Amino acid sequence: MSARAAWIEVDLDAVRHNVSYLSSLIGDAKIMVVVKANGYGHGAIQVAQAALEAGAHGLCVALVQEGVELRRAGIEAPILVFSEQPLDQIGEMISHGLIATAYSVGHIDALEHQARIRGVIGQEVHLKVDTGMNRVGCKPADAVELGGRILARAPELVLGGVYTHLASADDYDTSFTDTQIARFDSVLGNLRRAGIETGWVHIANSAATLRRADAHRDLVRVGIAMYGI
Image 1: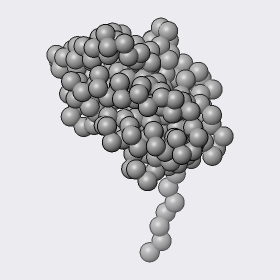
Image 2 (image 1 turned 180 degrees about the vertical axis):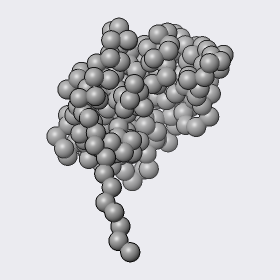
Image 3 (image 1 turned 90 degrees about the horizontal axis):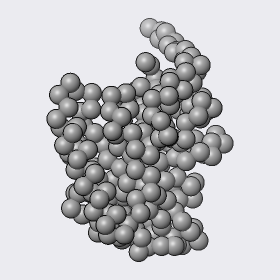
Image 4 (image 1 turned 45 degrees about the horizontal axis):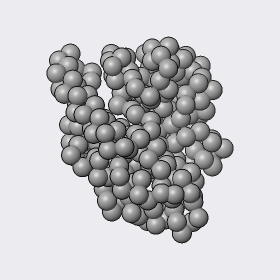
């Protein structure tokens, strides 16, 4: 029995068009494009390069190795790694200049330690807040403590951003999205009242980029919308 070869053909001009179109919707906000899982099966390196050529600010991945692959391909744009990563991969993440996500005391301390032993100053960290997705992120009530802990780990660490993920922004019923945005805004207010600069604020995924101008903030993170509109 023989197997038949299978392949896909990806129109990178369509990717560029989609990034340009999405950029036209978001005013002064910038786009981070999601290229996890090999660019949703489209080829992470090629899609990333096309998106950056079209004006994307940076990239998002799920795993350290995905970010390392992009760096080895010569991509120098900002790369945010979603979620806290295994402790034995933190050093590689820092060495390749990837932006870390943190939402726990232990991970913040591990990031500071690995940055310090490598002589790295200003490792960028984004604080992720769970406003209702119930997947990863700190509790809203813990955000000020954790944001302050990142600041206290200077000069090795810098709080470069604060973000959350919307669970159902594509639903016709917007009530839960409204609730998540309100919770996130409350967290931002608490951080700022505590004297903590939030850096890049981002909340919008693909659906919110298309449907919720109030969620655009400093950055939007687009995944599936980039691959087909």
